[in-house]
Length: 223
Image (spheres, rainbow, N blue to C red):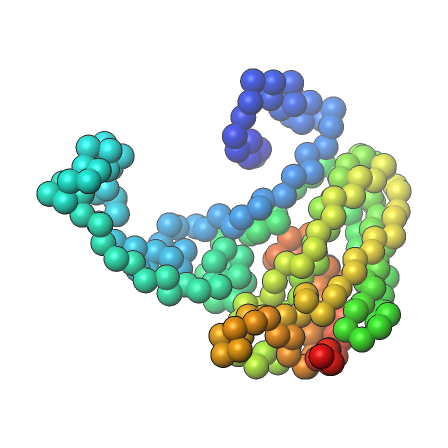
């Protein structure tokens, strides 16, 4: 199955190359696809008769309260949008954020996390193309607070890289993690803060396919 999204006039040649194996597909989903529309948290406060709001009705009734009624809707999902919701609260999505298949296969090994200075880390690991097909992998870095002081997403994407490897090739991939990557928005002080405590740095092929992880103990920066 090939997800083609928005196609242009020259995409037939690209699709031909993918379907006939001339090139390996290497894209990843930039959003989550739920099994049902009602699985999205935002639907909890959406008008129950949303199916009745046809395009023709909306276009005809612009500005006419007798035809089109605007209903207030509270934004109660807060940060629980997309993969943050599905990874934190569920349910399992049909296709998760960052998902994508390829003719090539990749292995992740030898993760190392080194603190370079206070709150800054260098993350490295080995990525190997273990197939006989050349292709690209989109590696993703997530931060997971192990003991969150407030309710927040289970994990958040903090970096990604698209790496092209020939068949059998291995490369060392590096990410820099800064204090800002541990931060959250504090509504009391109205600023971003980075809480002390243990965090898990995760490396994955998607939000639901974490290949490597290592815990670090972050200490808040001095002003």
